[in-house]
Length: 129
Figure 1: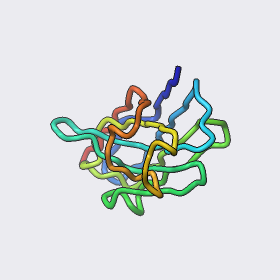
Figure 2: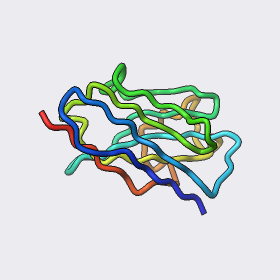
Figure 3: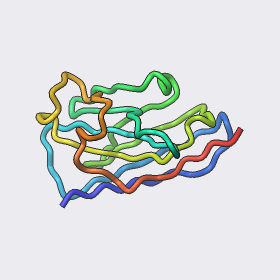
Figure 4: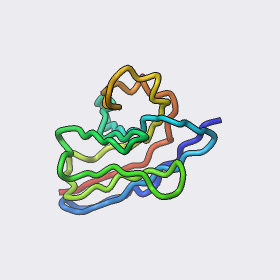
């Protein structure tokens, strides 16, 4: 059974930083896509950043230059470093993982949360102005 657990959310002021963590268990994917999504109240879930088993990364335009997705040294551990946070970054952040062969793109940036089958419970990020 796949399990993903996010942590690291919190409340910060505009311009602050947070690092989110996602620890996965119950799966061994030789090739995979891992993504961070976020969802603000009343809005659709949007893709923030992705990383694949090669370390190839993608970012939403709204976070480029501020957020960095990475894989940790421990197996199935991923991070999202968020710098220069803005009030519009306020949302619940989710990590998701999917075997790469199920995603028919050269990158993991499908923009579609339904392409990912396994999700964490989410961690809240609140940025005040």
